[in-house]
Length: 253
Ligand SMILES: Nc1ncnc2c1ncn2[C@@H]1O[C@H](COP(=O)(O)OP(=O)(O)O)[C@@H](O)[C@H]1O
Ligand SMILES: [Mg+2]
Image 1 (tube, rainbow, N blue to C red):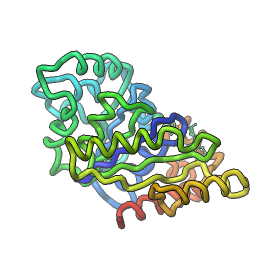
Image 2 (image 1 turned 60 degrees about the vertical axis):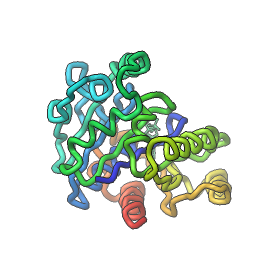
Image 3 (image 1 turned 90 degrees about the vertical axis):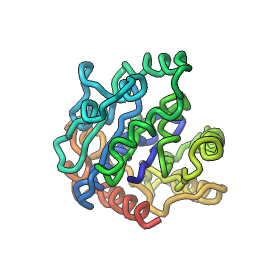
């Protein structure tokens, strides 16, 4: 099972949109078995897939529960092959609880939990919070791959150096197989000079950048209100083609 963390210390860069849509494309276009983990207390990925709730077990329980049974945590979505571990505000207190509980290893809880379902899924995608906290560290420790969505603005690469350092430290200390696959540009508008120049600037930095650019589309926001992945909501929009291309580019790495 490949485990992909989608992460950036910034909000609003399309971490959630990318996680949900890449997971949905892997399941429905490529016919893979996919587990999506919502690792943000805001629970937006859970909401888009219509599984957000305050009663269900979810990522908070993966962090805190001893003798965890993943079958009680994982839920099916409305899409064949796509399952989810949901998040809600309970993840906030769960993270605090983990920080105070030094009797058990703190950074390997996701990894241990995912061992239970290693053979059941081809891919696991983790949608992370814009933060380095104990649950994002757990995600990096459990991951094989990391991708960083970036939206071009004046502060596009703020925090990237710190994030890259965290990835490198995680690789050195706990997860030698962790691969930084690269950044990818989201919400791209090729008619806007700031976007084209910003993309060139990013491509000239020392970080690897995916060739696929995810175009901005007015269909994206309504797709989230409709609780639908973009390739279902608007199959012909640029972002649908781009997310399919991005998944293929990642699979070919
Ligand atoms: N390709 C796109 N075109 C237009 N809007 C987008 C696109 N990708 C994301 N968005 C919008 O950007 C906002 C932030 O996306 P989101 O995935 O929630 O970011 P994050 O998880 O990084 O905070 C949302 O309102 C989303 O609808
Ligand atoms: Mg998000």
